[in-house]
Amino acid sequence: MKMIGLLLEDYFDEREVIYPYYRVQEAGFGVVVIGPKVAAYHGKTPYSMDATIAASDVNADDLVGLIVPGGFAPDRIRRVKAMTDLIREIDAQRKPLGAICHAGWALISAGVVKGRTLTGFSSIKEDLVNAGANYLDERVVTDGNLVTAQHADDLPAFTKAFVDLF
Image: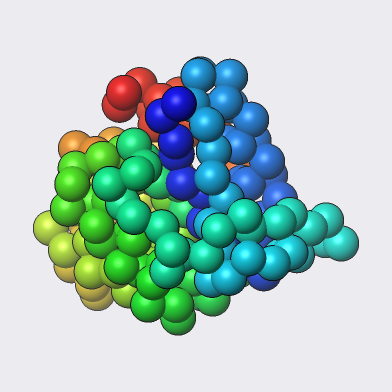
């Protein structure tokens, strides 16, 4: 089965994990939940989800795509070298890479936004621009293999655009 990675860290936005988790499965893909280590991670509410594999144990060659959810998790994801390395490797292989809301922070730390056109939550616009991205104030933006969304409200269009890359 073709596997899509879903990055997970504490303070994730539950909607931005749960919705794509099930939608990509409905599209025929498997999902592997990846954290800094195998553990339970907590969302912004008491909801938690288990990462089944550590990022350091994931080979980008084994994934067909990767999704980085938002919330405050991206600020933690970008501090884990194995996670930013995985983002960079997926992008270098031109595999579908999705980022929702604040996930642009993780993309910045992975070094994949310079010269790219994308969107993200309005509060990280300056961070994206300062990292060399062309920011569009649009709900969902696709630039090659990269699909970005501004907000959890954009999940239906985001997930469709992500799956359409296949």
